[in-house]
Image (cartoon, rainbow, N blue to C red; front, side, top):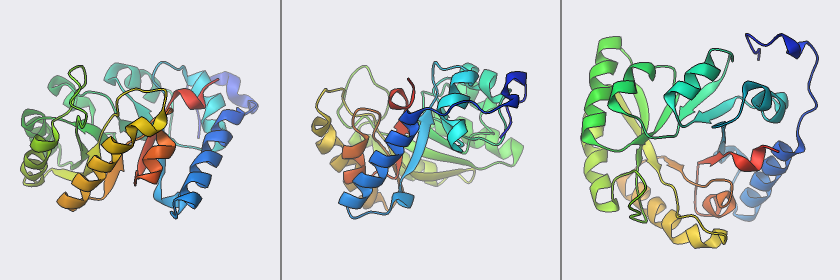
Length: 228
């Protein structure tokens, strides 16, 4: 891994222990839940953090899977970093689809119109987009995502588009100081995933990822717990 435009990285930085702590928590939770740690992918969310911070807190541990919320912020960082598996985890506007070819996975498909835009651009570029349908399980008005009832329709609609592959579902549970509060939302998403015959479950963030792993998360999106 090289930071293309950062000359100060000629000598290694002192890695942060926070990454190791999160990694250990993932492993221990998987063991308690009877799962293999390899079943859970950690997406390190780098929103609001500089390339220098990302290198110190994440990359120095050999981790290369990063998630960004906003296209512009991602473009600034991607121009300085190499050999990264990028995930788009924030809301995607249709006019930003043209920038999305480098993303390994888009977590935020939330409408048929966005599916159509991805399909049209993918067809022009001979590219297949891997996507997750974003589900607003709790029905919170301030959050993006389709309802549980609408999710099945959007999944089937998107599966019929040749330049999209629907890998699974994503959700953001309501914020709470008690991680177990998120459990019923994670259970509901898992049940929907199983009903639809999909594979991936992107759920769980810094405050509730252990609960998400217990309930079947295959991808956890962790930001603040990784940065000092």
